[in-house]
Length: 185
Ligand code: PAN
Ligand code: ZN
Figure (cartoon, rainbow, N blue to C red):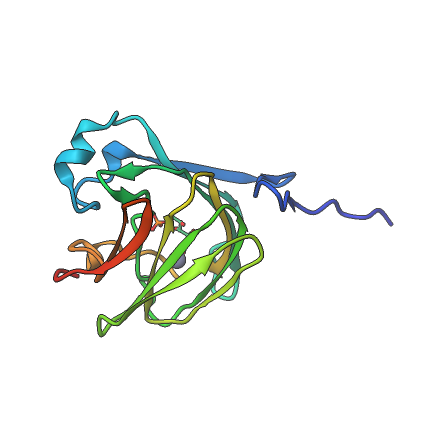
């Protein structure tokens, strides 16, 4: 019998290899109305990549799990740190687990009732995202923030439910990370 070579994640960089991969880049031009300062976003180069997602091309069938790595680059739109769009799962009851691999940042979690909280993300951090909870990564550091995620193939993404934004935004002010509660969301 031969031994199957599995896909690999390089823990230090988050790079996935040796499996069938799907890749998606999200750029400044894709993130209309995501950041508080829409004018500042329009001043930036639209092609600049804010985050890349690499995932294993596995089955989306019920009971199967997806595995992916998000690489969120350092940067800001105005004073607001680069972040992912963020979403609820279309199947609201479906949870997810994130593992911090490199860099430093925050995971913003928000319930359907609008209660929001922030967890620190760093190499080795483990984040249990329960069902019915929207999630967004925020890079508050100066290096790439990479996080591994595992989620149900049937979960799906609902971006529209949070089109008006989350209840918390995170800014750099006076060289410090400042989280602010906002009215929308
Ligand atoms: C992640 C996210 C990834 C990109 O794989 O999809 O970090 O964020 P957005 O999907 O919000 O643009 C995940 O949470 N999957 O369910
Ligand atoms: Zn998710």
